[in-house]
Image (cartoon, rainbow, N blue to C red; front, top):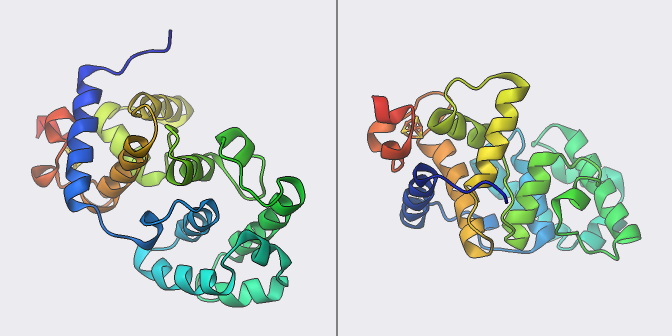
Length: 219
Ligand code: SF4
């Protein structure tokens, strides 16, 4: 039988999702479940701030509203639209991914993280993010922000590859079953890492999960 969530993990989840429903930001990619649009936002958000991505996301999707249209584009046009976001490798991979999905998946992004992982430029985080944010799967998506929150809340001494494995395992245990609760939880933990439990400062005094947190609970 798979391990069960602990009472502390359940309290963390409950408090976090309640807070997110109240305080979560209304971002354009949170208003869609279109897998391609979710993917574009996730690729742009790697190494780029939310405020900057918002404009680029709208402009990119206005020119390439579907995966098929992106697949048919010339690479120089994709790069032109990417200008200002930097890290052009992301644009090259996204373009190649669109072509692979059209050629091998009839233009539809798969919903399983394992199959997403096989696509160009898709790592473990992006596969999880598309699976949960587009398909509402109960799949962890651990980026730097989420990893930091879970480390501080559950494994303050975790380091290295072993620490990384523990963090992903806890992220899995924290997942609700599926559907909207899974989507909400994964958005919420990301939001907490962006707004409250940041790399620069842990604002434990205003944190909604403080009573369930191994670090904040001691302060
Ligand atoms: S209580 Fe503090 S350390 Fe714990 S999750 Fe909140 S901000 Fe981070």
